Length: 462
Image 1 (spheres, rainbow, N blue to C red):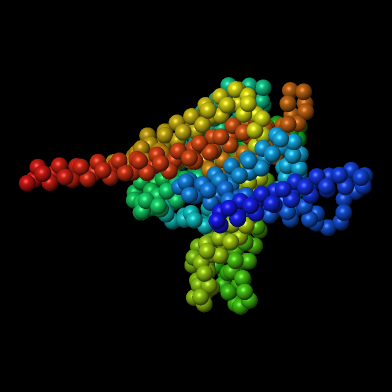
Image 2: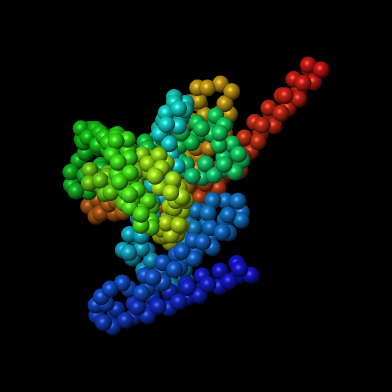
């Protein structure tokens, strides 16, 4: 009954949004294109639609033991498909600047949360194993993705092919961590290697994103990017991350200790989000993606910084962030789904591109298992745990859709066009879907093997 009511609410919101969007378009034409002052009420209705679709889709996929993010993405794809039956109001969702800004805030908050869940000390503790796994899982997918893009879309610029390779680099920490947590395996050696390598992958992936995006912006501006420029961008990225760690070590404790003197409600969460946004702004200031700053902000914050708040009975920051994340992050994923043009899936070349891209995305991460130097570790589980691209792949694709490069005729086009974006979305969905059952099978298979070995040894001894 509750599910029926929720579906009815979504249907009513969608129908209302379509009706009002059509009326708004007619009024705009009648008024000669003059916009009213203030916030367009249609934006409020659109936000309501996106949030309800996100929660309904997330609930349905959660019931299927799949990540909620896939439900949010698929829900957006369904909304976007309404344009195929003549509902042109969908275009307003794809192009609205306010919704795009809210989605970008959602991405920044998401990367901040990923940083909060990561721990520098644990990354250092797992040491060489995670580092080697991360590097192997970065290099192989990068060059495989580059090669596949060059084969299937040869008309695209070289930097476009390189950007496709970059989208395959990172690993979704959240999805893998959820599977391991559900199985009660978070404390195993394999899990620590996987999660440590996934975090390092994210850091290195963001560095590659900064370099490639810098090269694309330089080319779009009519210049070229020399090797010295690449070194400068990489140096700025590393310097920013090192600077963020130093700020977290020596400055942040004093800032939050001072904030603890304020007794008004919400000081802790407001201070943390303000710090996140400041770091995102600082990253943009030095030419990096704001998400790099948001991730760095989460990475340097630790529970010890909020000790004074916790002592007076406030909730941990991760719990305080949950409602903020639940509000903004789904807007990003649904909007990414809305921007998928289903018409491109009628093209055999796009489906072939998506299939091969997905295949190399999976194979590329299996190279990770070859980089494990420790004995007695489940190498297959480590390779499978690195497969999902999830939200990270979508973030890269979303950024690529905003970057422009001149084509052969000199006309600027998005680095990630509609067809390529659709192929990347398929890759993200498949890699995210296959990881949970494959990882569970691998870990259970190893456990059953150990049990059989123990029974055999016991029988021999007796």
